[in-house]
Length: 322
Image (cartoon, rainbow, N blue to C red; front, side, top):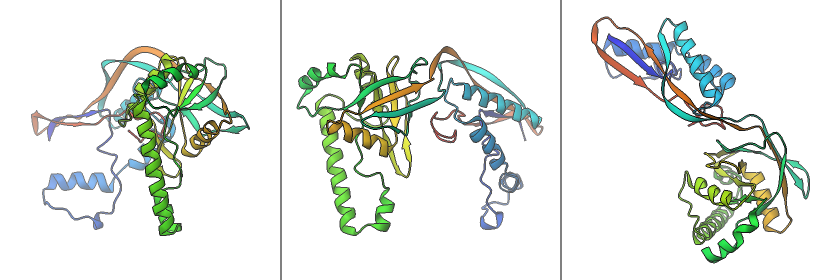
């Protein structure tokens, strides 16, 4: 056995799905590997540990109170197993707390919306903020876009592609006719390409993850109250969200259906207005740490095995997503 087993902010050795041994084939007779296999498969504590980590502690965005709480729980858990562990600082990060958030459509009718702040978005300072939702203009070039840009002051700008359907393809394949599926996919592809071309014409090219940051900063400089993003994950009620990249302007993300509602209202000149109340706040630059655990060995005291994984997670989900 090695002298130390290092674990950097993870319970990877114990978070192994419980699968009956009889359903597995094992390619070696090495007794050490077989012992490790048996421990991980037959004695897994994955469900117990995951329930605390995901349900009680939840998301662990770097620099957030959830991240700090997760680290403390991990150190305590290792110590309860008689494994020495500690938090070791490795640098600093802008600390941020999500808090509560609520978004309502208030005009032309009232409806509570499936929306939340993007990570590291500022809050509303304890007071609700209202603003009209507008969509990207159908302009031909950057000059026309720059002429339109001052009109976003005090408004929320919907910056994402509005999906023509929020029903997953698998559900279409189950219930729709083949002709309907082909028609839907062609219409969606054509509409999305037209939207991308429009964004490119105004200098807001969509390049995937992180593209929202450059776009939101452009509208922040123009005085917009906020932006609304939406990244549907092609599943029921699921979408992706990333960081806001803003310092003063609200950055929100909406579920597929509610984003489509806001976009249609705005595109048809029906002047939707939303009201946002968010407790999110920046907590200043602060230290961040790794959890380091050491398990002394006996047979090879001068050798080391390093087991590492990151322990943070994206803020909006259950704490299992990164």
